[in-house]
Image (tube, rainbow, N blue to C red):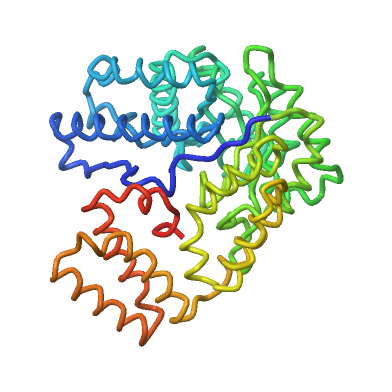
Length: 419
């Protein structure tokens, strides 16, 4: 069972995609953006390989206006063929399974023919992108069914009719998912019966939009799994947790480890891949992978602690000390306790004292190479934080600029600037 995350990689410096407005979408500009974005994707694949992450959803925005052929008429598949081949080789060699998930405006069952036409173009773009990587049909494109438009039965029929018109290359990759408002897992399974499209079960969507379906999550996952054929690879599920105090359906900032482990144990016999949908992205993926492995040992927790420690010191000195004590036993593997303490600390509002303590520790990595102007600026930021902890983000941005300037790998690979 692989555990992965979606689209963005956190805690790794400068892994950000770029785009532009239509009026700036010249051939030259688009080519530069695509080159940059493919380089970012390759760095993300490298990171995932290093961390042992085997499941990764790629962003839909790597090729700006990829499905708008009037705006972007570059032959990007050919222009960047070498890049695609190199990235695809890394994906295959490291057995990473990739996917893509078009956004809310890709709607196959709209009653508006123009919307449907654009949706079909968007699916062609996503298919072309994955095909360029030279990977098999187990690398998928996930899609919601769409809208109801006042008549659910007609909406069902339109999806099935449009699905039949899709190119075979698109159908080979397309999988369909239950949503949190309109189409339940039972609805999606019925559509799968008519189309043959494999089904992805989303637990949070089902919790919100499936209350009348009196069955366990494992039951629906097993039903969804039965829609996958051999060439589709291992069945996938989407897993997320509700963020406390937020709107219904909002994904949690981080995966709460004990809650995840209860879920994992319930689906482990089904042997499915688990895509996490969570705001801290790869940080939760690493957490869940370490928590479900009994072979990683204390060294991997120590590596994670090196990335977390200044973010935790900033939030709570007591939690910082408790984690240090926890990791002293080199024969133990207290992975759940470790992450529970981190989760508790990250929920804590920092005091000015703890924030300043953490700032000083981070400053120690860049202070020797800082010039007089930068040293004066740091003292100014410190005074602002001393007066109000709300000034902390500004001080951290300053320290990050220094870390980038000095190429401080240790700081840039930590989570301090991202948490």
